[in-house]
Image (cartoon, rainbow, N blue to C red; front, top):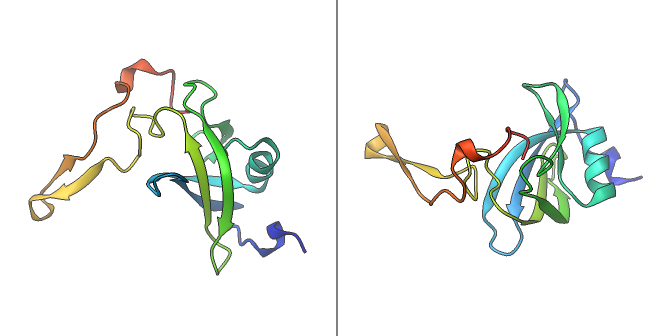
Length: 130
């Protein structure tokens, strides 16, 4: 039995993938994968995802050059979430930050603060498909 048989894709055929920087343990992003994008990720060693909003396959870094080299793929005990460890080049976030999790709750929930500098201003890349 291969590992795909242990996975539980949702009703839309998708599974959440948490992307983590291998060297630091920092969570960089969460995106969705379908079976085809996961197979392509395994085959190429580069993260590939399914965009729910655009209804299309995309490869991280195909337009921005901000790539993720896959170092390990794990799945949780329920088989319904992936953890992909990568070596990140450039920003993981389409807004130009190292991580998509660059904002933290502040002021007892009435506000937020930016927790890291932008690597690249948001208007300087060509689209969300980084």
